[in-house]
Image 1: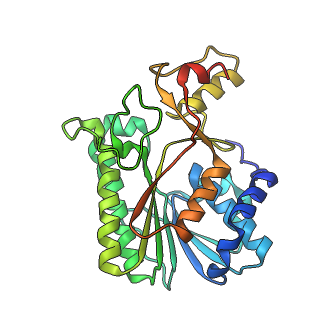
Image 2: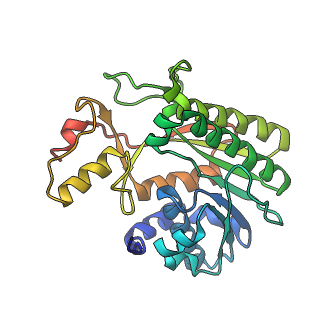
Length: 289
């Protein structure tokens, strides 16, 4: 696989302009970031590095990855930076890095639809045990603010007529269906975060993330829009992958990144926020855009 280019400067400038006033409190401080090598993670790391340089903040981050060699081949411009240190390990049992980490972003999640269908027990364990392990680390690392990237999957199957789900929606994944492992795991992770914040005394913020699009989105995974883009680029018939009447709302990745950083720094403690676009369209309409 060829290495990925750096993100567009105009996107990084947007993240900087929308978050600039937040960063002074983090001057000279350390972050611990899980999932830093996925789609969300690359956007977080590139924006972190760009802002660190632009504002001369002297921050640093330790980034957990399952496969450092593969990630270095994927984005060498990140692994070559001195303000990013990479720790190889599994989310459920990595070796705790030494020192204090005032900020923890837990963005690691096994979101593979294939795994969720074929080995839901592994999916559930990865999501829940991983969150618990990171929370325990944060509890002994002097963490002040903790951000969990959760999922709209905590609401269960979205009613066909509903374009947007509010945070107070009482729907939930069916616990009697094995493939509910991901959504139920995320619900359990959110509860663990609340318990962890209460026990250890740090702030916890939860981002329930929906659908996104932008540079570095995988084109060979279970993301509908990624598959449609792949088919279009290769000149193949578009694979809808399901019900064309289902609603989706796609937020651009730069706006997602702004939301995540703002939630980490300024989100009220113990709150969950839906993160997605206010503009809705059906899968059928998406194919005609």
